[in-house]
Image (cartoon, rainbow over all chains, first blue to last red; front, side, top):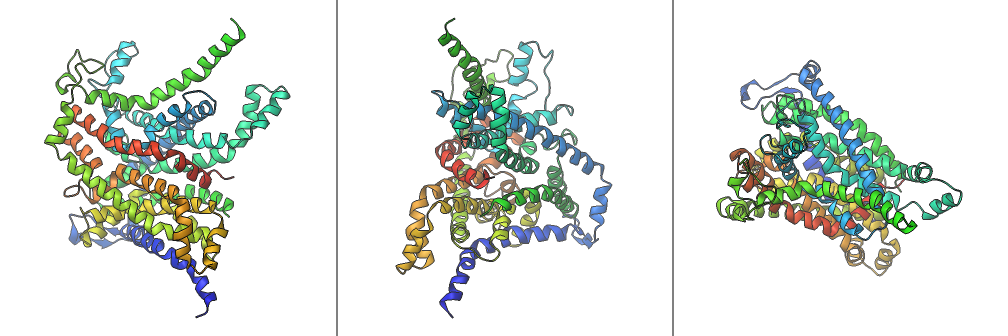
Length: 293
Length: 279
């Protein structure tokens, strides 16, 4: 063999451990999920396993819980991501100014991002506790609430209570991404604008926002995908309840498979969710691919 | 008011005060958990419950370590997270080096594939992994959980390390190869030492993610190998009212990763934004 073909093979040899590992732990299971979704397969009915083609998928179309979960996932994303973005944006603008305790502030706002989701669920459940939760105590003391509110047990408030917790968890991500973006905008642009007599608001619209466009789009897309996927905080706080009030699509798929042990139907739900998500992921990958060297 | 006073007032109103509010919002839930954990369990549900612990007591922590298997839970979390770091880094280092240093057919799609894996829904993989591991007898074992965590550790580590390797000039390892080093030797002797801080930061981030992970840990393990997150969740179910114990577990369980995160955040964010903030 010539040295030439050796060199040509080197990158693939270097890649092979990672590729083999992902084939085993990601792509093979993924294929399995696809295959399982074509079967009627419930764990405690091992004799009743049968190939049923796309029947699980047809059943999904007539499953009201699926459509409710899909709608709830839209609310879930549609509220969580913009609120995280808004709060993160304000935080980043503040952190971009010079003040003596900036390093401390910057570190402290990262705490929500670092915590385990189980601990987050636990903390917020304790804050929302119907009898002795600090939120009820505070609101009642201010007179904003007449009697204690069971935030997580009330179907009308449960989803929004969890969204608040998730906004809290995710806003530091936006703050840090946007802060990094702000620091790439050259300061002399602002100086030039000041000389021309631009107001703060005009500078924000004319310099800051356009300069951040790339970062904002990237961060929002990453976050949409992440928030769509994340179900552990919901699972810990309400388990999807009361009733179906806090079921999002991935949580429904998870509960159908894991709690009801209905592997076939649950897999079909998971595949359906993944396909919906894949649309978003593809748009994101296109963007990244364009900028790649 | 003098102009100077006006300036101070403005910065107080539009900078320090809102910043203080946001910082308070960020840390308040954790602080509240900490305060609760320092209270006497019996006072939590009384009508005259106090805001601050009075008196401060460590009984919840004593009980946590003496009466529950919390230390062994921490141990399991440590083994799994450490294993995920080792597996994730060792497999990804050569891959990242290959992506950073070579131009070959299929490079772009393969790189995007690693990014895609990172965004894959856990819910799609968790059930097949459960079935596969049941067949391989890997359920409820450290190895099984480490393999499951490598689904996010490998793609993440690969992408982070590409960004660190890209910063090192190519001429450095080319010089080593001219001197007779093989590509792997050049990587180990020249590139790895320079990028070591980045690699450590990546490893720590994998550690944090694995330590914090809950769904895989609860489905693929939970009895013999009960990691911290699963243990905390089980406490919620078993003792509905033991909030003192629970908050103590939450404080202790979150502390190591929070400190680690503070420690690496600057370097990590530099790597993340290099990869994602382009354009």
